[in-house]
Image (cartoon, rainbow, N blue to C red; front, side, top):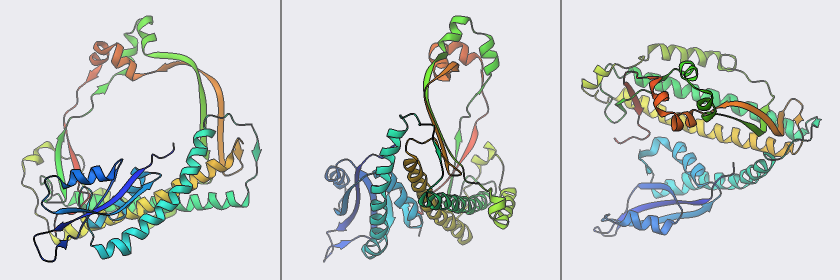
Length: 352
Protein backbone atom coordinates (compact mmCIF):
# COMPACT_ATOMS: atom_id res chain seq x y z
CA UNK A 1 0.00 0.00 0.00
CA UNK A 2 1.32 3.42 -0.98
CA UNK A 3 2.57 5.68 1.79
CA UNK A 4 0.70 8.79 2.96
CA UNK A 5 2.49 12.07 2.40
CA UNK A 6 2.80 14.79 4.99
CA UNK A 7 5.28 17.09 6.70
CA UNK A 8 8.32 15.98 8.64
CA UNK A 9 9.54 18.77 10.92
CA UNK A 10 12.33 19.53 13.37
CA UNK A 11 11.79 22.07 16.14
CA UNK A 12 13.70 23.49 19.09
CA UNK A 13 12.99 25.99 21.83
CA UNK A 14 14.95 29.10 22.77
CA UNK A 15 15.22 30.67 26.23
CA UNK A 16 14.52 34.40 25.78
CA UNK A 17 15.34 35.34 29.40
CA UNK A 18 19.08 35.05 28.90
CA UNK A 19 21.36 37.27 26.85
CA UNK A 20 21.90 36.28 24.15
CA UNK A 21 18.84 33.99 23.92
CA UNK A 22 20.03 30.37 24.13
CA UNK A 23 18.73 27.61 21.88
CA UNK A 24 18.23 24.35 23.76
CA UNK A 25 19.89 21.04 22.91
CA UNK A 26 16.48 19.35 22.73
CA UNK A 27 15.29 18.48 19.23
CA UNK A 28 11.77 17.33 18.42
CA UNK A 29 11.33 15.08 15.38
CA UNK A 30 7.66 15.03 14.43
CA UNK A 31 5.09 14.90 11.65
CA UNK A 32 2.03 16.98 10.86
CA UNK A 33 -0.55 17.80 8.22
CA UNK A 34 -0.11 21.48 9.05
CA UNK A 35 3.31 22.22 10.56
CA UNK A 36 2.69 25.91 11.45
CA UNK A 37 -0.49 24.93 13.30
CA UNK A 38 1.34 22.11 15.09
CA UNK A 39 4.16 24.46 16.12
CA UNK A 40 1.59 26.93 17.42
CA UNK A 41 0.14 24.16 19.59
CA UNK A 42 3.61 23.46 21.00
CA UNK A 43 4.09 27.17 21.68
CA UNK A 44 0.92 27.43 23.78
CA UNK A 45 1.87 27.20 27.43
CA UNK A 46 5.61 27.09 26.68
CA UNK A 47 7.62 30.00 28.12
CA UNK A 48 10.41 29.35 25.59
CA UNK A 49 10.15 30.37 21.95
CA UNK A 50 9.47 27.41 19.65
CA UNK A 51 11.50 27.54 16.44
CA UNK A 52 11.15 25.37 13.34
CA UNK A 53 14.59 24.38 12.06
CA UNK A 54 13.33 22.14 9.23
CA UNK A 55 10.06 21.38 7.46
CA UNK A 56 9.54 19.23 4.37
CA UNK A 57 6.66 17.48 2.61
CA UNK A 58 7.65 13.81 2.20
CA UNK A 59 5.99 10.79 0.51
CA UNK A 60 5.74 8.80 3.74
CA UNK A 61 5.60 10.97 6.83
CA UNK A 62 4.94 8.16 9.33
CA UNK A 63 7.57 5.88 7.82
CA UNK A 64 10.24 8.60 7.86
CA UNK A 65 9.42 9.66 11.41
CA UNK A 66 9.58 6.06 12.62
CA UNK A 67 12.90 5.54 10.84
CA UNK A 68 14.44 8.63 12.46
CA UNK A 69 13.06 7.80 15.91
CA UNK A 70 14.64 4.33 15.75
CA UNK A 71 17.85 5.54 14.12
CA UNK A 72 18.50 8.04 16.91
CA UNK A 73 17.15 5.85 19.73
CA UNK A 74 20.16 6.36 21.97
CA UNK A 75 19.55 10.14 21.88
CA UNK A 76 15.85 9.90 22.69
CA UNK A 77 14.73 11.50 25.93
CA UNK A 78 10.99 10.96 25.83
CA UNK A 79 8.36 10.73 23.13
CA UNK A 80 9.52 12.74 20.11
CA UNK A 81 12.21 14.74 21.93
CA UNK A 82 15.91 13.96 21.45
CA UNK A 83 19.12 15.17 23.08
CA UNK A 84 20.68 16.44 19.82
CA UNK A 85 22.25 19.89 19.57
CA UNK A 86 22.20 22.07 16.45
CA UNK A 87 25.66 20.90 15.33
CA UNK A 88 24.59 17.25 15.36
CA UNK A 89 21.30 18.16 13.73
CA UNK A 90 23.31 19.45 10.78
CA UNK A 91 25.99 16.75 10.75
CA UNK A 92 23.96 13.66 11.73
CA UNK A 93 20.20 14.15 11.42
CA UNK A 94 19.96 16.08 8.16
CA UNK A 95 22.08 13.66 6.04
CA UNK A 96 20.03 10.69 7.28
CA UNK A 97 16.74 12.52 6.81
CA UNK A 98 17.64 13.72 3.31
CA UNK A 99 18.88 10.32 2.14
CA UNK A 100 15.78 8.55 3.41
CA UNK A 101 13.52 11.17 1.83
CA UNK A 102 15.18 10.63 -1.55
CA UNK A 103 14.86 6.85 -1.23
CA UNK A 104 11.18 7.25 -0.34
CA UNK A 105 10.51 8.93 -3.70
CA UNK A 106 11.55 5.82 -5.63
CA UNK A 107 9.90 3.51 -3.10
CA UNK A 108 6.59 5.35 -3.43
CA UNK A 109 6.63 4.88 -7.21
CA UNK A 110 7.07 1.14 -6.71
CA UNK A 111 4.29 0.99 -4.12
CA UNK A 112 1.86 2.74 -6.45
CA UNK A 113 2.77 0.24 -9.19
CA UNK A 114 2.26 -2.65 -6.75
CA UNK A 115 -1.18 -1.35 -5.71
CA UNK A 116 -2.22 -1.46 -9.37
CA UNK A 117 -0.72 -4.92 -9.94
CA UNK A 118 -2.58 -6.29 -6.91
CA UNK A 119 -5.83 -5.73 -8.80
CA UNK A 120 -4.58 -7.17 -12.11
CA UNK A 121 -4.76 -10.92 -12.84
CA UNK A 122 -1.41 -12.41 -13.82
CA UNK A 123 -0.91 -13.54 -17.41
CA UNK A 124 0.36 -17.00 -16.45
CA UNK A 125 3.83 -16.33 -17.83
CA UNK A 126 6.87 -17.79 -16.07
CA UNK A 127 10.14 -16.20 -17.10
CA UNK A 128 13.81 -16.17 -16.21
CA UNK A 129 15.11 -13.26 -14.13
CA UNK A 130 17.07 -10.38 -15.56
CA UNK A 131 20.53 -9.67 -14.17
CA UNK A 132 19.05 -6.73 -12.24
CA UNK A 133 16.36 -8.95 -10.71
CA UNK A 134 18.95 -11.54 -9.69
CA UNK A 135 20.99 -8.84 -7.98
CA UNK A 136 17.87 -7.54 -6.20
CA UNK A 137 17.01 -11.06 -5.04
CA UNK A 138 20.51 -11.60 -3.64
CA UNK A 139 20.43 -8.18 -1.98
CA UNK A 140 17.06 -9.03 -0.43
CA UNK A 141 18.37 -12.30 0.99
CA UNK A 142 21.43 -10.55 2.45
CA UNK A 143 19.29 -7.80 4.00
CA UNK A 144 16.90 -10.34 5.53
CA UNK A 145 19.81 -12.17 7.15
CA UNK A 146 21.28 -8.93 8.49
CA UNK A 147 17.84 -8.08 9.86
CA UNK A 148 17.60 -11.46 11.57
CA UNK A 149 20.99 -10.88 13.23
CA UNK A 150 20.01 -7.35 14.30
CA UNK A 151 16.78 -8.62 15.85
CA UNK A 152 18.70 -11.34 17.68
CA UNK A 153 21.14 -8.79 19.13
CA UNK A 154 18.18 -6.69 20.26
CA UNK A 155 16.49 -9.74 21.81
CA UNK A 156 19.65 -10.57 23.79
CA UNK A 157 19.68 -7.12 25.41
CA UNK A 158 15.93 -7.39 25.97
CA UNK A 159 16.40 -10.68 27.84
CA UNK A 160 19.33 -9.24 29.80
CA UNK A 161 17.26 -6.27 30.97
CA UNK A 162 14.42 -8.53 32.06
CA UNK A 163 16.89 -10.64 34.03
CA UNK A 164 17.98 -7.47 35.85
CA UNK A 165 14.45 -6.99 37.24
CA UNK A 166 15.20 -9.41 40.10
CA UNK A 167 11.52 -9.57 41.13
CA UNK A 168 11.33 -5.78 41.35
CA UNK A 169 8.37 -3.69 40.20
CA UNK A 170 10.30 -2.37 37.20
CA UNK A 171 13.62 -0.53 36.92
CA UNK A 172 13.82 3.22 37.49
CA UNK A 173 13.73 5.00 34.13
CA UNK A 174 14.22 1.74 32.19
CA UNK A 175 11.39 -0.76 32.69
CA UNK A 176 7.79 -0.27 33.76
CA UNK A 177 5.50 -3.13 34.83
CA UNK A 178 1.73 -2.89 34.44
CA UNK A 179 -1.16 -5.17 35.25
CA UNK A 180 -2.97 -6.20 32.06
CA UNK A 181 -6.14 -8.16 31.41
CA UNK A 182 -5.62 -11.37 29.46
CA UNK A 183 -7.60 -12.12 26.34
CA UNK A 184 -10.18 -14.80 27.24
CA UNK A 185 -10.02 -18.27 25.72
CA UNK A 186 -12.66 -18.88 23.05
CA UNK A 187 -14.04 -22.39 22.52
CA UNK A 188 -14.71 -22.24 18.80
CA UNK A 189 -15.86 -25.86 18.53
CA UNK A 190 -18.51 -25.45 21.25
CA UNK A 191 -19.68 -22.18 19.73
CA UNK A 192 -20.14 -23.69 16.25
CA UNK A 193 -21.92 -26.74 17.68
CA UNK A 194 -24.46 -24.47 19.39
CA UNK A 195 -25.51 -22.65 16.21
CA UNK A 196 -28.67 -23.12 14.20
CA UNK A 197 -28.32 -23.04 10.39
CA UNK A 198 -29.57 -19.44 10.38
CA UNK A 199 -27.08 -18.42 13.07
CA UNK A 200 -24.28 -20.22 11.22
CA UNK A 201 -25.05 -18.09 8.15
CA UNK A 202 -24.72 -14.91 10.22
CA UNK A 203 -21.04 -15.54 10.89
CA UNK A 204 -20.03 -17.35 7.69
CA UNK A 205 -20.07 -16.22 4.09
CA UNK A 206 -19.61 -17.49 0.54
CA UNK A 207 -18.76 -15.76 -2.70
CA UNK A 208 -15.76 -14.90 -4.83
CA UNK A 209 -12.62 -12.92 -4.12
CA UNK A 210 -9.50 -11.72 -5.88
CA UNK A 211 -6.59 -13.97 -4.93
CA UNK A 212 -3.18 -12.33 -4.63
CA UNK A 213 -0.37 -14.50 -3.27
CA UNK A 214 3.17 -13.11 -3.64
CA UNK A 215 6.00 -15.41 -2.55
CA UNK A 216 9.72 -14.72 -2.70
CA UNK A 217 11.56 -17.81 -3.85
CA UNK A 218 15.14 -17.32 -2.65
CA UNK A 219 16.42 -19.77 -0.04
CA UNK A 220 15.84 -18.48 3.47
CA UNK A 221 18.15 -19.45 6.31
CA UNK A 222 17.26 -19.43 9.99
CA UNK A 223 19.45 -17.74 12.59
CA UNK A 224 21.28 -20.97 13.61
CA UNK A 225 22.42 -21.31 9.98
CA UNK A 226 23.18 -17.60 9.52
CA UNK A 227 25.13 -17.11 12.75
CA UNK A 228 25.39 -20.15 15.06
CA UNK A 229 27.33 -18.23 17.74
CA UNK A 230 24.74 -15.45 17.91
CA UNK A 231 21.94 -18.00 17.96
CA UNK A 232 23.54 -19.76 20.95
CA UNK A 233 24.00 -16.43 22.76
CA UNK A 234 20.35 -15.58 22.26
CA UNK A 235 19.27 -18.97 23.57
CA UNK A 236 21.49 -18.56 26.64
CA UNK A 237 20.18 -15.06 27.37
CA UNK A 238 16.59 -16.24 27.04
CA UNK A 239 17.23 -19.03 29.53
CA UNK A 240 18.31 -16.47 32.16
CA UNK A 241 15.37 -14.12 31.60
CA UNK A 242 12.33 -14.57 33.84
CA UNK A 243 9.26 -16.30 32.47
CA UNK A 244 5.80 -14.88 33.12
CA UNK A 245 6.19 -12.30 35.90
CA UNK A 246 3.94 -12.94 38.92
CA UNK A 247 1.44 -10.24 39.87
CA UNK A 248 2.95 -10.19 43.35
CA UNK A 249 6.06 -8.48 41.91
CA UNK A 250 3.94 -5.33 41.41
CA UNK A 251 3.96 -4.87 45.19
CA UNK A 252 7.76 -4.89 45.36
CA UNK A 253 10.02 -1.81 45.24
CA UNK A 254 11.25 -0.49 41.92
CA UNK A 255 14.84 -1.55 41.21
CA UNK A 256 17.36 1.30 41.36
CA UNK A 257 19.17 2.02 38.14
CA UNK A 258 22.87 1.10 38.08
CA UNK A 259 25.64 1.78 35.57
CA UNK A 260 25.42 -1.81 34.30
CA UNK A 261 21.67 -1.46 33.78
CA UNK A 262 22.18 1.85 31.97
CA UNK A 263 24.80 0.23 29.74
CA UNK A 264 22.44 -2.63 28.89
CA UNK A 265 19.60 -0.21 28.21
CA UNK A 266 21.88 1.82 25.92
CA UNK A 267 22.71 -1.31 23.92
CA UNK A 268 19.02 -2.21 23.72
CA UNK A 269 18.31 1.24 22.30
CA UNK A 270 21.33 1.12 20.00
CA UNK A 271 20.25 -2.11 18.29
CA UNK A 272 16.99 -0.48 17.23
CA UNK A 273 19.01 1.47 14.64
CA UNK A 274 20.32 -1.65 12.88
CA UNK A 275 16.84 -3.17 12.85
CA UNK A 276 15.23 -0.17 11.15
CA UNK A 277 18.10 0.18 8.65
CA UNK A 278 17.89 -3.43 7.49
CA UNK A 279 14.08 -3.48 7.61
CA UNK A 280 14.03 -0.47 5.27
CA UNK A 281 16.38 -2.22 2.85
CA UNK A 282 14.18 -5.34 2.90
CA UNK A 283 11.06 -3.27 2.20
CA UNK A 284 12.74 -1.48 -0.70
CA UNK A 285 14.09 -4.65 -2.35
CA UNK A 286 10.75 -6.45 -2.02
CA UNK A 287 8.93 -3.50 -3.57
CA UNK A 288 11.42 -3.26 -6.44
CA UNK A 289 10.98 -6.95 -7.28
CA UNK A 290 7.17 -6.86 -7.02
CA UNK A 291 7.04 -3.83 -9.30
CA UNK A 292 9.46 -5.53 -11.71
CA UNK A 293 7.39 -8.70 -12.18
CA UNK A 294 4.61 -6.77 -13.92
CA UNK A 295 1.75 -8.96 -15.15
CA UNK A 296 3.90 -12.12 -15.17
CA UNK A 297 3.08 -14.98 -12.83
CA UNK A 298 6.62 -15.89 -11.82
CA UNK A 299 10.26 -14.91 -12.07
CA UNK A 300 12.04 -18.25 -11.77
CA UNK A 301 13.86 -18.59 -8.46
CA UNK A 302 13.01 -15.00 -7.48
CA UNK A 303 9.29 -14.29 -7.08
CA UNK A 304 5.97 -15.99 -7.66
CA UNK A 305 2.91 -13.74 -7.64
CA UNK A 306 -0.30 -15.59 -8.42
CA UNK A 307 -3.18 -13.19 -9.07
CA UNK A 308 -6.54 -14.70 -10.00
CA UNK A 309 -9.89 -12.92 -10.24
CA UNK A 310 -13.16 -14.33 -8.91
CA UNK A 311 -11.78 -17.25 -6.88
CA UNK A 312 -14.77 -18.90 -5.15
CA UNK A 313 -14.85 -19.36 -1.39
CA UNK A 314 -17.43 -20.81 0.97
CA UNK A 315 -18.13 -21.15 4.67
CA UNK A 316 -15.69 -18.32 5.50
CA UNK A 317 -15.66 -17.65 9.26
CA UNK A 318 -15.88 -14.13 10.67
CA UNK A 319 -15.32 -13.66 14.40
CA UNK A 320 -16.32 -9.99 14.03
CA UNK A 321 -19.73 -10.98 12.67
CA UNK A 322 -20.11 -13.61 15.40
CA UNK A 323 -19.45 -11.02 18.11
CA UNK A 324 -21.79 -8.56 16.43
CA UNK A 325 -24.78 -10.80 15.71
CA UNK A 326 -24.44 -13.54 18.32
CA UNK A 327 -22.85 -11.74 21.25
CA UNK A 328 -24.58 -13.76 24.00
CA UNK A 329 -23.60 -17.14 22.55
CA UNK A 330 -20.10 -15.92 21.73
CA UNK A 331 -19.49 -14.63 25.26
CA UNK A 332 -20.86 -17.85 26.76
CA UNK A 333 -18.06 -19.73 25.01
CA UNK A 334 -15.36 -17.43 26.38
CA UNK A 335 -13.43 -18.37 29.52
CA UNK A 336 -11.68 -15.62 31.45
CA UNK A 337 -7.96 -15.97 32.15
CA UNK A 338 -5.96 -14.41 35.00
CA UNK A 339 -4.45 -10.96 34.55
CA UNK A 340 -0.82 -10.81 33.51
CA UNK A 341 2.11 -8.45 34.01
CA UNK A 342 3.05 -6.43 30.93
CA UNK A 343 6.71 -5.43 30.62
CA UNK A 344 7.47 -2.12 28.91
CA UNK A 345 11.10 -1.22 28.21
CA UNK A 346 11.45 2.54 27.78
CA UNK A 347 12.23 3.67 24.23
CA UNK A 348 14.14 6.65 25.52
CA UNK A 349 16.51 7.63 28.34
CA UNK A 350 14.78 9.99 30.77
CA UNK A 351 18.01 10.11 32.80
CA UNK A 352 21.49 11.63 32.27
